[in-house]
Image (cartoon, rainbow, N blue to C red; front, side, top):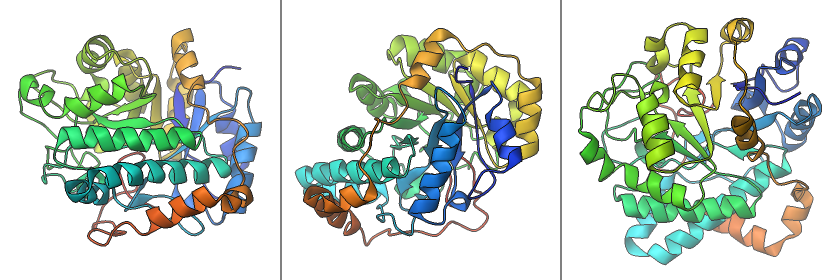
Length: 362
């Protein structure tokens, strides 16, 4: 059985018969985990092992584990800072910020891989225009070059820990105020303005070998009337052809309001896949997941399958015990845990939903 183009979530801390039935469906290729799926390191390792044992090749297991307010697993894991804290350090000590970004990526990846998770949807490559509450301190900086350098350092740390990186939210979510969980944001800027600012970190990270990308549920009407995640212009013409990206394109959560203009969940998935996505996410709505699996007709192209396989975590990761015997990891863990103080571990804003790859923790 090959990997399918759909990523779903599961209900709790262990698989139910309902979960197993969904995950064995040939259209499924991955699982995204949330805070509700975690109680301890041992429990998470059992859950991921059971998920991986269901299929061959293994289903991909992903999580939103960026740091700050978007960190799904907390007790027993290193507290990761919001990426803006690295940007603050960059302003005074850029080399120190690069080192800390690398250490953050390594600790993030090593701990997730020790628990059986293949990758995290990180880093955020959006610019901090101080407009977007849903992005906010998740962005590294206002300067696109600073974002590119820090994100590259983080990606190198992720690689050291056995994990690929996924940049988001292409071509940039930071300029709009609207939250795509609740409405459809519209960015009225010309393409030239976006290209000269927002696209710089994405382009540089592609040149550095970025493995995955997630487009924004944002409409850029000067380029296309469709949100970027449903736009052939953005995904095929610009991302693939112009920028030369050859990794996996993951849709953002199709349950979000920003995806609603594409129709029902089957229509949304078809539109995203036809526009150029390799894998679509449906989160927190089991009925929608069942509707999608019953109604979607899609043959996974060989190239898409090859891209997905590259997202598996590096085999034979270090165990938690081995990590804590590694003095370099312990030093990095303490360095990462000491970052912060300005933004800290922020609580969700009132009413902020728990969606897939752009929101807070549950």
